Length: 334
Image 1 (cartoon, one colour):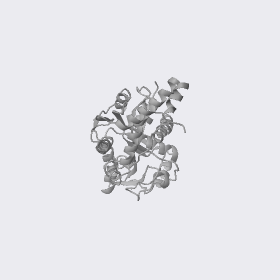
Image 2: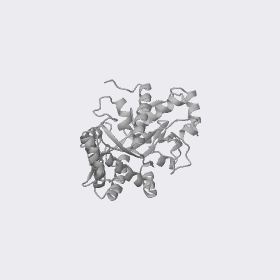
Image 3: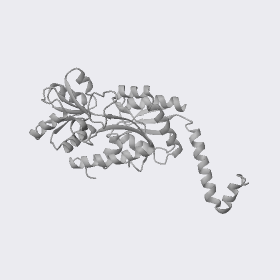
Image 4: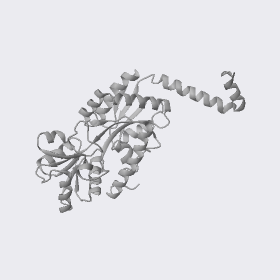
């Protein structure tokens, strides 16, 4: 009977250096995954305190600290449409102690609309997991004579270039949601950019603008100042099943526009660490209490995904939004 203790010596006699390196690497990876983390982890949020990304970061940090037994320190680093935080994390040590709460803007929109950014969303980061996704609500002012998405499309076709929609600024997710809607519905609504969503929503409520794709419209709907026609997710929200998707209500199969939030680490972070973070966060966000808290706090669905699924999402959305940006003439030259 073969003695297992003989296997290393027989292998090393044939492939002396390669075999030893492989065995040690596997052993080191196992130990690394078991020992990690041994000190506090820095979770960088690319947005200012108080916003949805910050709120989600703190929900995750609190739960993750409990699961891993180490403090998770949230660091807010806003600026340059999330690029400042992304650049900082891309240059951080690839040891699992610095992670980034990135968004669709950070990894899938900026590369086309901001070609001078100093990070590569694919080469410079190791995806961990999609944490949550927040869609937009398609809302209109109460004076607009429409009660459905199909009504809005019909009216826009009757008045090309006469209807408008407010966004959170040129090139933002809410702007691109409107441009995608224009493309797929074959209509031409004019975008009105705002620096502050509060001003945008006030103007929608008072009838100064007609349409908004926004994730903060429900309070205005509940007071009767805004009519919600649909939600831009690919499925109805668990927290608001009565609201149809824009795709189904507008007969626009495939229409989807959401702001997803996901955690990434610097490229080269060991896979055992990535896998441990991914599985731990997945277990956190599938907890019904956490899912409910995320829905109540940011109006989004908790997701949880594998690193590979997140990587695929980043790449597919780079193409999707890149095409929309180019068709809208928003792409900037180098």
